[in-house]
Length: 183
Image (tube, rainbow, N blue to C red):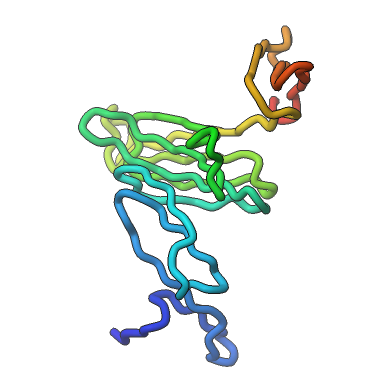
């Protein structure tokens, strides 16, 4: 094993053999540390503190960035994925949250524009005995962007279940109809 002092993940160009990029990765069980990719040596520019964090995924898109963090099941508590804004929003710790059981591992797949997340959960063992390969499930998480900052006053489903309306923000409040993510 060759030790390299400037990163523990190196990307090579297979045709020329030259180094394309170097990254440093270190896993912490209590937080996700965020670094400026252009100045890794300058140290962390922030962190997301979350006990027992096992993996994370960064959404495509610009500021504020979205970082989904997975915490596996532990001592009877369900597993969860929380989506945090970065830089952090002082008003709230996370913008979306989903908890579930039967999840030892996850694959997180962001929509190309970063607006939604599909979470594929898996276990090594199927407790129902229906499969040799464990159990899998899918979950969909989307934070709903509001047209105005402030309190959510009310939310109601469309009678057809194809969308909903949200009334939010300081007076005068805005009403936002959301239909684009429903099937």
